[in-house]
Image 1: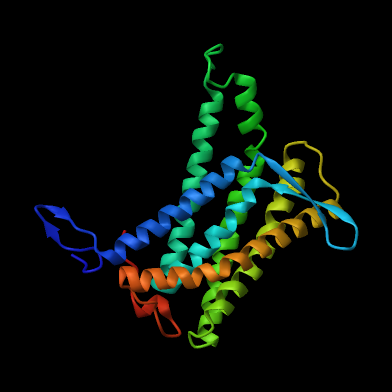
Image 2: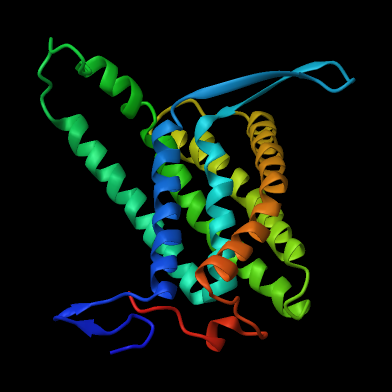
Length: 258
């Protein structure tokens, strides 16, 4: 039995701290992605004025959770390597897809109307039916963005010799979020609408929406950058694990078997 998992006691497998932390980080990542797709049906607006005149910041509430997934990607990459981080990205992708399938089945079920405290068919369909295309677009964008984030993070770690945590954390997020913002915007407002006979948004609207989302994600990423230091400290000092070292962390220490 692998030492990463633990030893058998009384016929059961005992997970060690390294494996437990990996599972917790993966679980948070999956939860953030699934919840982002659930709350993504709500749009928010902030009225801002930075001296150049008033303007509105408008976007979906679902994008608030995505920077958290990139922060978790960085922590998993830091302590478990690129292979383990990619595995979590793929698991999160399929769990979000699984959630989408379950919601689709729920939409197809006949509704028992008139029960207080429950959603009628119109309300349920308004929420989950209207966000179906956005959910699929965001899931695909998440996968591409996460894999790119993992690759860029590893690149910065290699070229800096493992130094400058802020550079690889922020740099990877800055690059990956840009692609994530444009992918989800193009997929939803142009590709998905075109395939389903909807109204295809003009390119200037797509660019404006994507850039707005990117600016918001970039700001959140900067705010979250110190959290990777806190996460590193917490895992090192409280849990007792050390970040992987070397130019190829994927080979330096294998990820815990799952």
